[in-house]
Image (tube, rainbow, N blue to C red; front, side, top):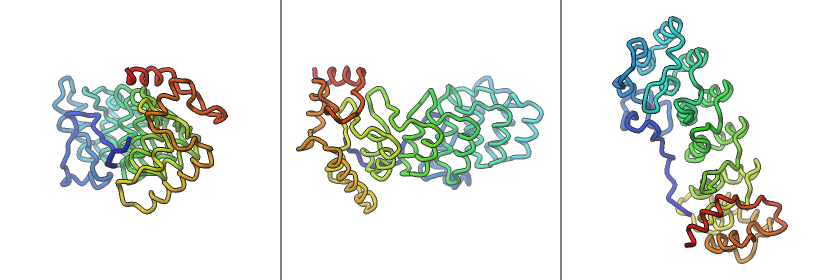
Length: 291
């Protein structure tokens, strides 16, 4: 279950993302390791008209007066699809200019980005200034966008940002949102040794008995030796271990393999836990794994 923690990958733009751009002043507005949308790559996409190119260039150079002028002349520019997952609002977040973002939102830019993938919000969560993510959520951006429902929470967890997790949960994100494998934000936090965030997720309603198709679970994470050296996280892991004991977790703690077997027998979560049953799709994946 355990991997060495590292910043969550941010690669939705694929070839449209630029890396190693320390010389670009915009990168100073974002957490280390953030790949920013490359306006040059977007400009090269076929079908991008001259006015759209001017707006892309203005956003790339953080030229707010030009952004204001172009959108005043044609607000529909904010809503243009740009190809390969690109969108004006993400470029606006990358500009690190509050007014540019406000202008795009006012012009009706899709708040969840291209194909509802949530790129604007995901990038905003990586901004050092929480205003950008707060602004998008207040405007109506989905904390769990349809194209990538778990991505915003995964991003906040990868950044070890309790404030970011709280922001998303306060905006309506489900702490138990799950991938097809049953993997939930709690499993992601435990796997990345973000034990303080795991505590917060449980406080906010995450199911401590939940498992994924690999048998990942809370108890195993609390007794696995940490790979990172962080006193605050170690203390949180210890508190979680005490919480597991208070939940009357079976002893000795079942291994992930044993938990998968219990789930297939209908005996996980344990009777009396009050927890929801393992989803049928996750059970199907466990069966496939057992073959």
